[in-house]
Length: 294
Image (cartoon, rainbow, N blue to C red; front, side, top):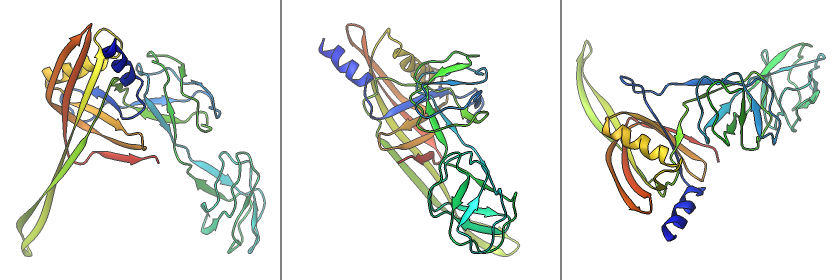
């Protein structure tokens, strides 16, 4: 019972999350899949309509939707004006946003809501014609799958949507599998700098060249025959067959590191009552992808 309690606690952990998927043989990059929205998503929605999924998407996959919003003036703007009439906005626009209508740059001084028909700005430096346009790019909205979605599905179950997402937008996913039951994933990286001397038409020249590498470990403790064991089997298969994996590692503080890795060490041990503890070490070369959503 004690082992079962520990295992369930790990499976429900909200700390570090690790997602992984096999990279095609002969390649160093994962296969990208495009997901398109068939209808807009409202704040708080827990389902989303999509065009038929090109591949099954496991629970936990993140879909990041970016959009470009065209802001169009609905009346001429005179120099010195602090309000600009626009057609209904396709996205909320925060204060201190810079917009460029042709060669005229303005900055908003107050937030405008979705559907608003005016912008409050610093004094406009020059006249702007009616029908002039500016492009605004909101921050991407990330939608997280709350349940597995089969290939060809047209409806997906998601965590409550944090913001509005417009219809027709697309996101790219690698259809990664979450490795449930993880306990820790310490990360280490290093960069080796070498001085290289080259001879060209201008004579001898000194250049520097660098190569980065990183590694991190993962410890899992899972029921051998549960759905959580799928990630364990994925890693074991990759190690036995010397396959590259693409992994994304999410920290509770909003950091994400991702890249193509190979497993350099793997071990497992049955703990009794059908529970398996496994450990593996990932190693990648060149700097990984890094983002921070804090």
